[in-house]
Image 1 (cartoon, helix red, strand yellow):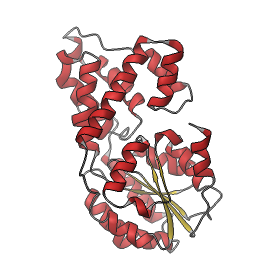
Image 2: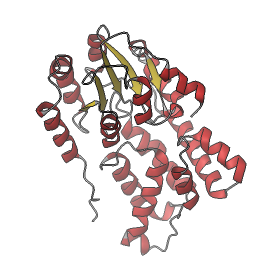
Image 3: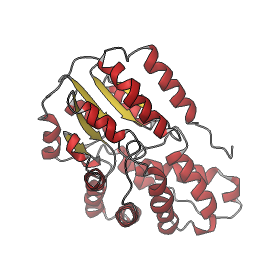
Amino acid sequence: MKEIEVHVLKKLQPKHKYFIGIDSDGCAFDTMEIKHKECFIPNIIKYWNLQPVSKYTRETAEFVNLYSKWRGINRFPALVMAFDLLRERKEVQKRNVTIPEANEIREFIDSGLPLGNPSLKKVVESNGSPVLKKALAWSEAVNAAIADMVTGIPPFPYVRESLEKLEPVADMMVVSATPGEALRKEWSENGIDKYMREIAGQEMGSKKEHLALAAVEKYEPGHILMIGDAPGDMKAAKANNALFYPIMPGEEDASWQRFYEEAADIFMEGMYAGEYEEKLIQKFLNHLPETPPWK
């Protein structure tokens, strides 16, 4: 991540007693399904020559990215995980299709660099890896497909109402692994970017880093909350001793209505930590399995 981008988060100073980080895809916006089913997965099949097993590729990638405990992870680890699960499937083995090992992508994931196109492009320029060139071409094609297709999608019901309710009392920030350009487009075209202190995408680091830079040691304990729809959002919150409010996959409307009518007030009354949060998190984790349905 660029130092200038990190500085944007470091220099944020509290205007209010409370800080709320909000994930975007699948959390504030109903964009997870369309992005993965229409943009990510068709390009996985195209760029990695998986046409002979397209049915299984689609099912596997949907499980990883939408319907498992890995929901919402960065695109590059998700790609490698989909490859690994595909390789194990008997239906795929019977078709004698070579599933990419993607070792160079694994090295990029483990490098400590921000897992976005700008970092990957620099690595490709330095080592010329054909596999990483393909990964970059795939990732750029995904972004182009998203820019072309994903538009005019409003936030979930009660998102706007929640932001309006909280703006006078809380500093709010988008905390996302999505590229910043796409985030700014989605939030601005719906007129809700005005409620946010900052929109932090993958170029500014991980969600854990976003919270650490923007909120930790700036707000009192119990005054930092992360709202998200994936276990990675919860891990980012807990790594920073922040509270977590889950948006339940498949129950997004009800989750936001509960937040607007109940949970936001409980948070600001200092009663959120403990039993209330634990019940919500347990229900959330029960939504997202670890074992694929085909196993």
